[in-house]
Image (cartoon, rainbow, N blue to C red; front, top):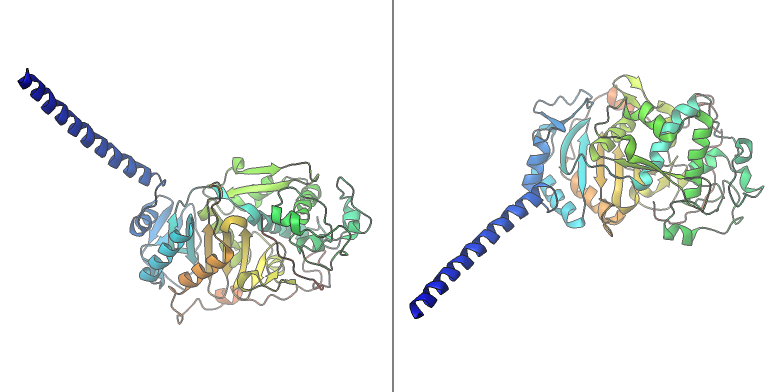
Length: 426
């Protein structure tokens, strides 16, 4: 009897060990699969190798700095950053820092070539307030074609709201709305709590006299655009921008209107992959030109990325153009949580930074992103031979107002006094 009990004990002990070993193996396999699917962070080397080996990009080993590159169906990505003159070691340090901040994906582009990239490059992330810069792009052709006049008032255009605008508010011009100085402090859709809290009292400022980052202005501009051109923002974006730029991941299902009770003017929401955001940044780095085709009027690119308002901040957020943030280093499309398109004409560089805003409480503050940018740009040698004219001259043209009539409907007075008021972008 004792002998049988002993045998049972040995058998059960062996079974437990086998079960424990099986469970350990399953756990290891599960972690591996989750890591491959992007649920767990991969080490820096794995992410870089995966990015360079993906079907989303084509490897580039022979780089010609005097040749302006454009992506076709796929981007060209340097087989190593040193091919384009950057430091792999310093970029690895920047990536580790980005991972510690909670950055989801980044793309670093010089002269139309991807220098380095990491994260999920094909995922369509929420654009948040970068959407406003997309609409600014669409305004360029509409203004140039005479469909929209920047001097037109809301009253001229028949733009109102519920509850109604006041007679004074109806005197705001399209130019005032583009520069966030309408003086219309009506409730708006898709506002953050910070924007609602800091919104001035209605009637407290006349149109054109005070800067406030105001979703009412940006949403009403969407209504004005669709009314003037007779086409939805999303349809026009696909036809005029996504298709000519051969965007890899843009889908109609990634665009939605946000309608609520606060206003009759809906917000227009986009999702975009980091690689497609890179195409938008390169388009504006090239002054609206894409492979010889002028997608956005060059004068509009200059005018919209010129600081018409001094915000009183630092870096890329020092001034405000036509729904673009402008600073001494270039200009940027900015969205809350950490969504950015940085365009640096002096360096011929575009940098994309995205955060997965679908993850609750995930965000990277502006100050942290500035520090990350410094680390990234430190990987680029300070002394180098950049692209020579005429191409370099094109991307460095001074941001001066166009001659009267160069852009139909441009007001002759492009600068008005304003006061800064901080608000978080949506």
